[in-house]
Length: 179
Image (tube, rainbow, N blue to C red; front, top):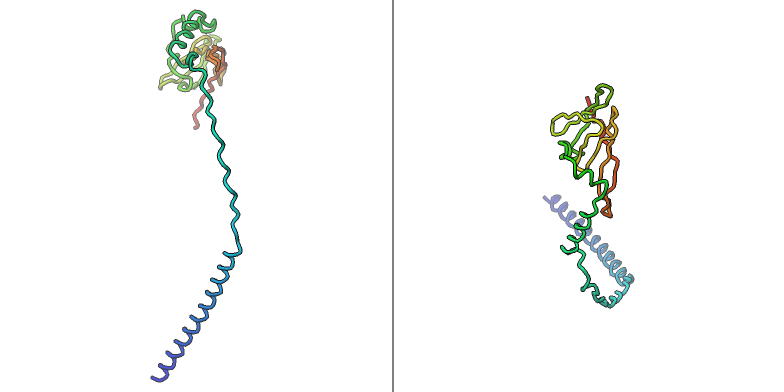
């Protein structure tokens, strides 16, 4: 019993001495942190005063509005009087069935030769079409110029950034399925 009390007493003294030791370390740490706070000064640049805004007067209030219906109708009437020679022939002819689909919706799946003339096979909406040189396809007045075993070369008539109608070459490549 005495041994048990003595061992408890020694244990309590040991824990107390450890607690005292930890207390002195935390006081040292706290002192060092306080010293560092006093020595370090943050460098903050002062804010620059905002520039004075001087509004500019709007001087085009009496001019024709660029998006007005009046200006658009004048431009359309002028274009109707002077149709582009590229577009004039295309507008007056009857559209072919494949001109109602985009080129992106068409896949070239093969080519054949009949009586020495090349024909291409196109798949559009799960239907197979046979086309030859001179046929039209796509929504931009695309006309087939050349058919090879691997591609269809055509020219399209499109508007450029300035609104002029120009010819643009385009191709449809053979689409082979992976086996």
